[in-house]
Image (cartoon, rainbow, N blue to C red; front, side, top):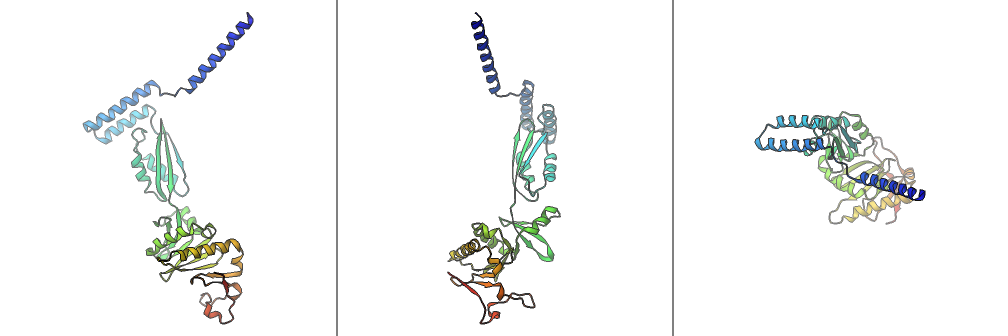
Length: 305
């Protein structure tokens, strides 16, 4: 008799546990009053649109109603903020309709894209009261000194980011490579950078880009090591590609090349040279010594093609 009673109690416990699990898996529903309120508010918005109720008036009524129903934006998550300003983003959102039902995602996205450093924005509503904003920022490529020392930054898409009076902009200028050229050459810089991205060991060490004679690039690394690249040739695009590959290979195989050599001259295909530091001097004007200046005893090392 006791055994049967124990089995019955065990069966009842199992049934109760299964019922709890079933309840926990049941989707959570909005309270009935809130659901009715949402339907009523939605109907009001549709009718007000049809009869032409002034947008400002129905927006105010809708906002108050949404607040009463607990559908007012109370929380906001900002994701991927590195260069842009959280304060400016928050100010834009707070200046809009606070009802999560009436909040215009596209309008908010358009306004946020006008802020400094912001390239694109992903916004979504998370009911009942949360807004999620993911920022896609512009990717700086180079610092571009302008006339009268006007500081400008170029991003990887070739867009110019005007000077800004903030700490982040000033810090960015300190570590970005310098672009020495004019606006017409920005497109060439972007194309050259696309090639450089394939060689991280080279791309990550660049101190400056200089477009020389409207035909080729000089690149100075942070160590002061100068790379003199061949002329760009649309008929033979592999010339520049091969030069980049050769430089990258040299840096990988000889990490101390900066200490022993001043520059790597790749201007003439299959005739690449490295100039040793003991054969380097400065003229009074600060100009580097050329091959002609070095004389017949110059110690220039030929790099095997």
